Amino acid sequence: MIRSILLAGAVVLASSPCFGDSLSSSGGRYAIEPSSHIAFTVSQVGGGGIAGQFQRFSGVFLIDPAHVSRSQVSFTLQPGSVKTAQSRITSFLRSSAVFDVEEHPSITFKSTKVRQTGPRSATVEGMLTARGITRGEIFNVALTQHEGRRIAFHVTGDVLRSRYDMGIGAPIYSNVVKFDMTMQGLK
Image 1 (cartoon, rainbow, N blue to C red):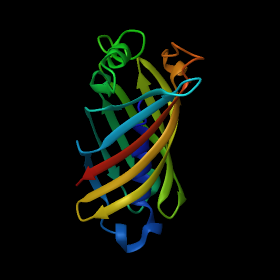
Image 2 (image 1 turned 135 degrees about the horizontal axis):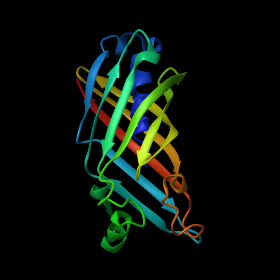
Image 3 (image 1 turned 120 degrees about the vertical axis):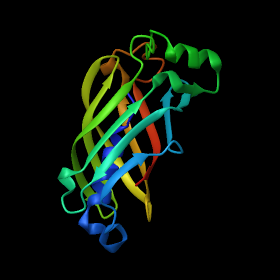
């Protein structure tokens, strides 16, 4: 369910000729750094809700500075690495009711299209697979840093959890999972 798709947006931004000289040397293959941060929230009727993050993930983005449409992002997340402020919620998210980490130990995203929306922003479309179900998702990406071999993007997006057979608790808990990620890459 993870908005790893957002990484694909990073590809678009880095490959865009509109970034001028600051990204002229950004083309190439970037490995997603473990220092990246993948956070999510699910709101609850009456306030509160669930906030968490994922601690294990990997992936790459290939940036083509001449042709945005040829850039690519692929990402794998281990839902068993989910962490929240309460251990009982963390255990519930890992259970068969939500992520079902025993049967589905990974969530993947592979970009299919990137479209620049501004000088330092883009949308990234791709296929997200969670619990064995594959659906198209879209993420918003903004370039936040590019220095030498390092690049970083802020990625946001909303995923409907019911589309991946994770709708338990609705309507008390929102069907919308809001992702807020900082994706860092190293060339």
